[in-house]
Image (tube, rainbow, N blue to C red; front, side, top):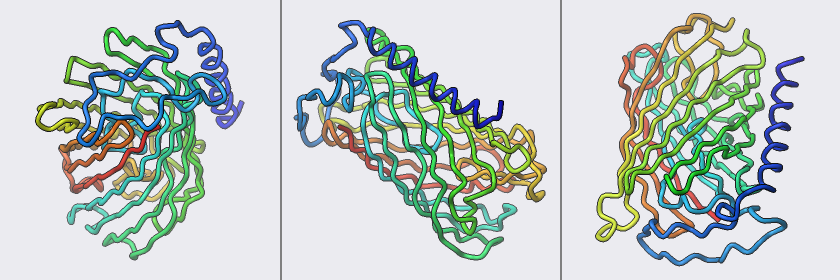
Length: 327
């Protein structure tokens, strides 16, 4: 069976399992109210009372985890375990280290993510699209469209009493973007993932692991991504909704492709299929905050910098900003 067929079969099986599970949700899980532990800067009033649209759970998704905040960094691959409906415009300003093989420069990315809760436990996710402006010393300055990636995720553990949720998912990235900005390679990419969130009163931890598998190993590298997020709402009475956070991200190149011997990979932005990258690792951290404005809107931002040698890949520094609008 081809890798495409395996991926599509997995998506169908995931959807079928989720729909079956949705029909057997316990009364405690179905239609649960929003948690009272969340605080907001501007208003705690919701714009709607979760009217049922088509069937129970559609658009509303999984309630009672609103006191968690969404991660900020590595937006394409750091998928949270929460099941909800949202749109997320984001901006990335990425600096290349002057001594890296790409010889300095920067990358600016504008993107828009979308997530739609199909049931209380199942969501459709569209995590990559947008437009990039690439200005690197090794390449001519150019701009163009990014690849598109979408898939499904399903919450297989939901324990509200212990503030715990775990979700598995699968996305597929098309090779439709513009090669002028290092997109649109000949290989598409499957990326199965697992993400988990655990709360300890006002302290929250979210982690995720993603395995990136090109559908042609000669034209792309297999990559293991992981992310860890920790946050704490420090002053809920004085600064309601303001939540400082720290994140760690890792990028491990597992295989070589048959592309040029660049000595660098594409981190979480692209997959270059580099021929001399297997075994290399890039780790970076981000510090910042997310501020919940209302039950439907939050702002996030981080400044990210490498923990491994910036000369050996393309991670110099990064500023990440986003706005999350939730149903």
